[in-house]
Length: 184
Length: 315
Ligand code: SF4
Ligand code: SF4
Image 1: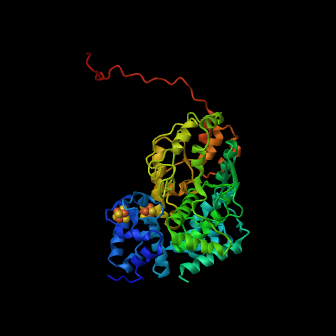
Image 2: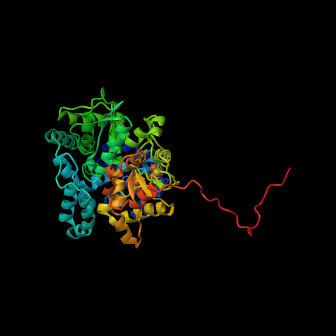
Image 3: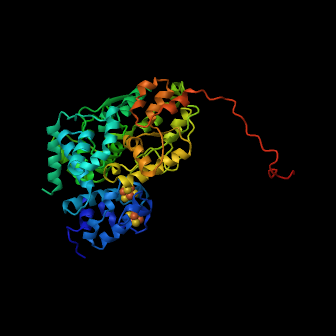
């Protein structure tokens, strides 16, 4: 069988370190049964892997499964085939973003976070909260207000970001990594 | 031995109490920790979902900044940082292509890293396994006798693959807290996830997860839940009032770092241990700790009218 190199399956097995282990999935269901977010997912990880193998790429990338993944690694440590399931979940998020096939705030959250890290070298919780909520959830931001206030009054929210000294160096590293990732 | 220290971004804001008490307790135990100069964020659970190669490279820059001759081990107090550093080192060792790609990216910043040269350790691991038990015992001058403390490890201790503790039933913090004199119940949710970033993006999912954790601790009679991770602390503490609102509950469970409790037992001034940074007040726990426990516990006497207990027949 020749595999479309752009299929979800091919991308996982070729791009992700350890991703080729997906071929060995036994469909045993240990992953789904262990998952703390399992009940909120459209498909359990096990089912999603069956769909990936069957080439149902569109349904796979439209599933909420990986967006509900909290990266806890429980499935990964329990999988009898040592499949790096958590990493596959990360990679599916990446593929869904790449194809523009997502319907979730999680992407905005991750992108805001990463944007701040790329510019400062450090995460900046206050900037993250304000940017994320102001641009995406003006009302959600209000709901989160008491939390921010409680943290601020206890000195737990820095209002000023820290920028690392070698931010140029970090940017060069990240840009190079992106180029390599893009296959140049 | 001298360790490299990776504080992690939360040390600068939401978890400064953890950072401060980690440093204090470590120095009291004679552990020398040198902060990595100009370290950067580990990307938490966000960067990997955008793009894995920059995510690995971001993390690897921190490892590359360490001189393995001087400090062959790096200590992370935050479990998310710990997992990211450890995973990067191990995967670079395991996957040649990844190692080559990451090093090519690092070269753009005149850096390089040889996988396996710097070992990542969690602060909890170092404190419990590297410190001589006699030294530890000698520091406990105000034991936590009378306090019931639930050890909540969160999901990253021992993951993704085997490290210093069991992946599902870790014991390190149980032993530590018992050594400090506390009563430590068997808490079956000890390695369940705290919901991670779900409090920010999928609040309803997170609330259910958090309630389960707090409720069991409450039913076990905990005076506090003790954590080794800023993300767990933040979710359980800062969002506890949201959980109460969502479920019509009234939990008042203090969420403290194990380093704060060590400080207490070591006789440090509670005011210096930054307990007031917790959103849920710790006052009643501290009061209970200050009240001496009477040693003459009343024995339960059997009700005279009760049926006789079964007894073995004489030989
Ligand atoms: S636990 Fe592993 S082998 Fe079993 S269904 Fe999940 S991925 Fe497949
Ligand atoms: S890592 Fe993700 S998919 Fe696996 S058990 Fe945890 S939440 Fe579920």
